[in-house]
Image (cartoon, rainbow, N blue to C red):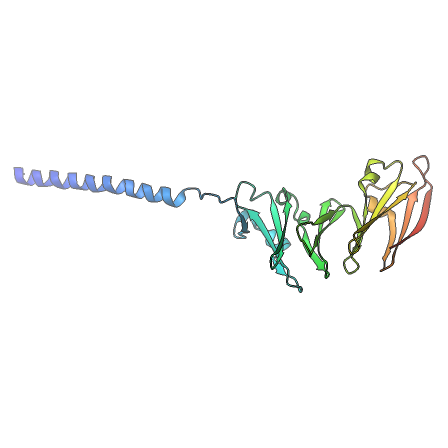
Amino acid sequence: MTIRHSIYILLTTVSTILLIACDKPHNKENSTTNNQVRKQTGKLAEINFSDTNYFDLKIWIKDTITQDGYKIKYLVRDDSTKYKDIYIECSKGNVRGIFHGENLLEYRRYFIPNFAGETDKHLYFSHGCATDCSALLVFPKDTLSKFKEFFHVVDYNVKLGQVLYVTDSTYENENEIYELALVDLNNKKTYKITYNNICGAVYKPTCIDTVIFSKNQVTIKTTLRKSIETEQNVTQTKIIKL
């Protein structure tokens, strides 16, 4: 092998090493850029249903526009809560309201409020609040931001704007009383109905046999235990004049 040939081989080898060395940082830089974590904005954003964390969510919720032109959108915040909290935005023109469902995405999907109907005054959403527990979320159309939420709902009538639910006092004093609340949303009034009897069932709304809603009155029929000392039942019918 000549000296000239040896020098040629040496130069070729050095050039190849330099090319490989130059290429490596470039490829590594591309890899880092493509895989770096995207900066979260902290803003409300549409739900990306292609994200596997939301794979079944589309079955339970749906953005919609009501017949009266109100837009209903389900959103998440682009931050650390995006797989925990859900937001419901109701809007029309310049009027806008947002319900924050804290940690609802960590529970069963029926805990998420679903659009149930509307009147000229309100938007209604129904949802679960525990096993065998029904709840109602109501947005008033004049403000949207001052929504109301009712738990342990017995029954409701969207058209008449009436909601009947078991109060917290019933659960706090379950061996002493049974108390209901009748809400007249259209007239912004609440009627408390208290019985000096008790409901022996774990799920308190089951002690109500019948509810009949009407414009001027609501009829409620109950079957309750007479007291904690006896198993005797008492059936009563009360008429609440509105």
